[in-house]
Image (tube, one colour):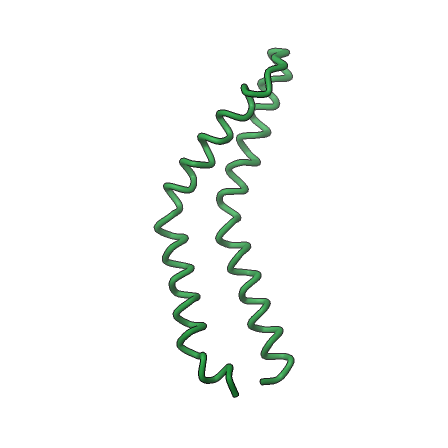
Length: 89
């Protein structure tokens, strides 16, 4: 197995981790920005005001994205395990 092949496998693994985490991180970031703007406008200093909606939105995003995430992860795992004999050479 050449070093280029190892780099390709690691690159694919990092890209898969990025694509699986991106929807949840984007939702958390967007809700965090919106809640911070609301805090600035209303001068509310309560930290729970920002945390609870962000947590709820991230949980909802996980529930909505879970089928897609499982499909992507299963496809990636099956491609890695399917080519295991090729990696062992």
